[in-house]
Each structure stands twice: as C-alpha cells, then as structure tokens.
Image (cartoon, rainbow, N blue to C red; front, side):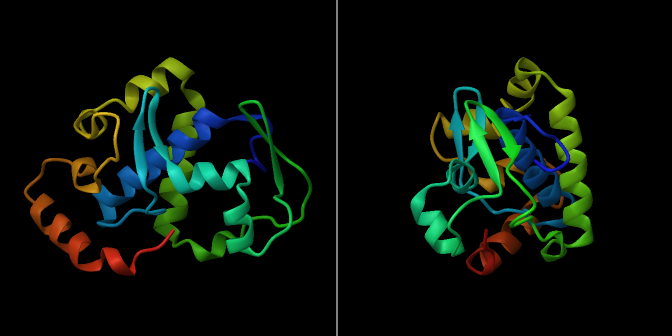
Length: 159
C-alpha cells in the first residue's frame, strides 16, 4: 500500500481497509482483515490496523519487530526502506484483488468523498461505537446465511 503510494494519506489507507473488508464480506462471506471497526466522526477506523500504523509498542512486540518499514508523519505514510516489506502471499487471490480495488477507489476520492462514502447504515447503527460486521452485509436473500457463517467461524478468523 505505502510502497506504491508514497505520501499516502492516513484517511485513505484506513478507509481502503474498510472498503476492502466490506466488499470482501459481501462477495466472499468473510472480511480480509477482520479488524474491529470503530465508527468515528470521519468514518470507520480499523482499530488494530490504526494502532499498527502508529507503531504502538504492543503491536511491535506482537509482530516481533524493532521498527516499521513505514513512517507516519502527521497524516502521511511513507516507506522507510525495503526492510520488512509486506508478504502479500498470505492473502488469497480474492483478497489481493478486492484490496487493490478498494485502495484505488479510496485514493481517487478526496477526504469529503471518502467520509461520505463510509457514513452508510453500518456506520450510523454503531452510533460512534464499535461497528458490527453483520451491518456491513448488504440486504440480500443470502444475508442470514452469511451472518450464520460468520457467527460459526468468527473465532477462527484473525487479523
């Protein structure tokens, strides 16, 4: 993400994760990241991803790294060097495709467009609290099956 988009806006990065999880859950019945989304004033924020981007010590220890391959300056992300580049092979083909599409969509939008695009009913239902994945699923005849599948398998999903 940062490698191909130097100086990437933090808002664009976080919203790309949201778009990707929402799109993937609707198409493939599972999120990509499985992050905890908090409904914030300017749209959903994937809490764990935001903490990792900021380089919080607990995540550094969990990842067993001393430094990140990116740097956050204000609201801009930039790559530090080639060390620790993300291994995309851990993502399925569908996850890579959906994320690439979500990232492209997010980058093309300005701040206000991204904010508006993420203030749908799933964000509104959270009332500035934690969002529910079931609210991200489109109202289709398959929704009950998707919700049931997620309830059965959520404990096996990880970030």
